[in-house]
Image 1 (spheres, rainbow, N blue to C red):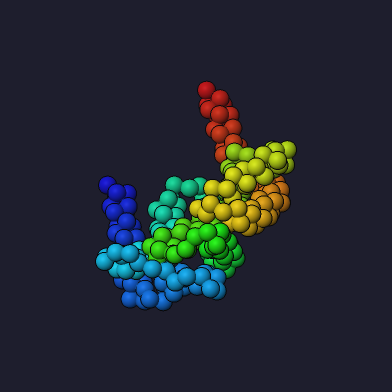
Image 2 (tube, helix red, strand yellow):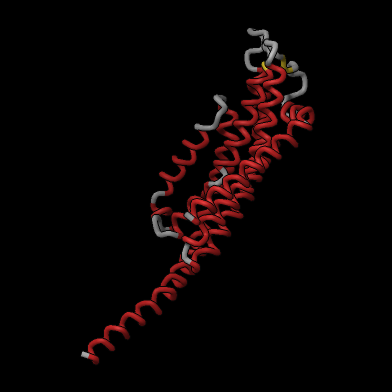
Length: 254
């Protein structure tokens, strides 16, 4: 019951944080809408709305996107604080480091999407076959696409954390990652293809940094794998020696 009460309390704080962030985001929704429209190339048509309620719903959705982005670090902290007592003390610091690094990569991925990937993708999509079509941009679809691209960039940039976590908990080894490097590159290509955009420009732009992140994760894991093994072996030796002394003592008593 104490755990359920703590879970309920932390869920309340997460929802309250999201509500406060939503109110704050909606109060500056005009600036947020302009920020999402900024990656459009010069000369692109202005976003339009086609129904009575669409302006309000579009501004509200943009506020929800911003509130979710702000709330993600708060939710991650509460999840970690709730699960930390279950994690072994020897690995608690490593999990906390992974969580912090994941948040940094999330911000870095979203920044890469906003500054690099999204402008190039929109420049290609909004000018493709412009001589054949009267291209108009519907505001709701445009801002939803932009938000999904930013979120997807932040998620796929978690690749090093996933690989390091698998190596840390001995699900994978560095030797296996090196032997199956081509399989890893193919998985990276699949991640790039699964991005929200349907254009090859976004796929190509995201593939390059993902490949760099993959190789960097393998390089870092190779440096840390031996240290992790020494730490785990040092943690298991006292327990094994204590068990051995207990067995010897019981034999002497018998």
